[in-house]
Image (tube, rainbow, N blue to C red; front, side, top):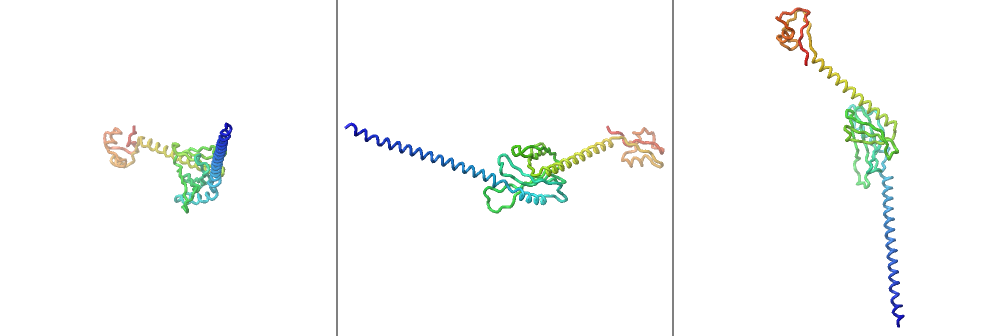
Length: 258
C-alpha cells in the first residue's frame, strides 16, 4: 500500500528534468546561432569596406585631371601634379582618390569621392575641389599617415584652422609640387619686401627738403608756379628781402618734413 504512491510521483520529476535540459539546449543553440550571424555580418561589412570602397586610383586620377583642366583660369598653367588620396579616421576605408596640382597661381586639389554603399541610380560625378592661392600663408609638413606606414603631405593654411592631409602615390612628384609651392611663395615674399622698401624710400624722399638752382631768366613767380607754392613762401624759407634773384642761387622750395 505504501510503495504505490512513491512509484507514481517519480515519473513527473523525470519528465520535468528532460524538459528543462531540452530548453537549455535550445537556448544555447539560439545564442550560438545569433553570435554566428553577428560575426558573419561583421565579416561581410569588413569585406565591403576593404574591397568595395577603396576606390579606383587610376580611374579617379583620370577624372580628376580632366576636372583640373576645367578648373583652370584663363592663362593659368599646371607646373607639376601628383596623384594623391585622402582618408579620415572616422571613415578609414572610404578612400578619396584625386590629384594635387601646383599651378603658376595656386595649389589645386580635385578629389573623386568613393561611390555610395547603396547607389541611387545614375548620378553625375561629384568632385571635391580645394584651391589654395599662393598669397595665403601655408605651412608644409611631411609626417606619417596610415598608422605610420606611409608619408603624408600636411598643409596648414592661414592661422591653421584649415588643415589638409594628402597621401601621395609618388614621392618624387610630391616633392616637385612642394618645390613649386615654396618657390612661388618665396617669390611673393620677395616682391612684398621689395614693395615695402620702395614705399619706405618714397616716403623718405617725400620728407626730404628740395632745392632749386636758379637759371638765367627765371623769376620767383615762375619758380613758385613750377613747384605749386607761393612767392611769399619762397621769400620766407630763403630769408629774401626782395623778389630779385640771380642765376646760380639755390633756393629752398620745399622744407624737410618732420
